[in-house]
Length: 294
Image (cartoon, rainbow, N blue to C red; front, side):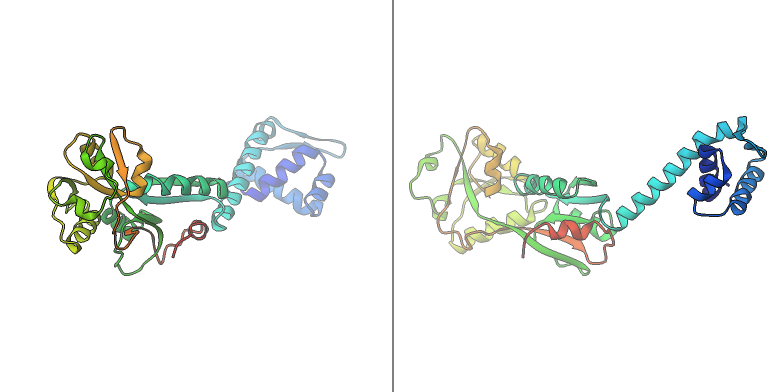
């Protein structure tokens, strides 16, 4: 096993070809320096220098070792620097989970901000439904997630980062697409593309609760799990839908988005940033501090 201090002494002597000058560079006296070189030669099993009263020069073994020794020292310094930067949260890896709808509007802006503020931290993004994110957070496979409430697991911390309204999505030729006064009552007995109660439980419960409060009964025909799938079916003319406002950024052709009066609360769609309380990733506090919320 090669000793880094011995290699550092060797490289300095090889560059100076003078033990006294090398010792001065290393802030040590000449006898300990000579001892370090002797120990290295013993470990390697070959003489590294030809030295007498007039000259110091590298042997063939020394000339072979010199570039390798410089590489080893450079790698050791880089490894040390990398470890220090990771410990300070200036570098490393942060694993982020997100729902598909979080990727429509909030996530792109957040990524741009993170990359500007922490360019040396690698982001590993994983699209997951909310339940999968909670499992991955609990197992330590994610550092934080962007998911839908509720967050009820022990050991988890969270803050709300988005509140947005629901908007209506109509096929372009639908009679209600040009309505001047669109309310929740407008959806009564209308063919409606609904969220799947198992795979999209948050949006299913949210929409069903909103209609139940005002005694409106749409005709639920199709049930799908993702917002973009809802829009695809609306575009195909299979019904109308309520989608989070962020979905308007998808700009589907053949779909008209309209505001709906009477929503209570006015911004019922929520997105939370969630992390495990005992997460020890040094980069995580930097990311949490850079995201507003409550």
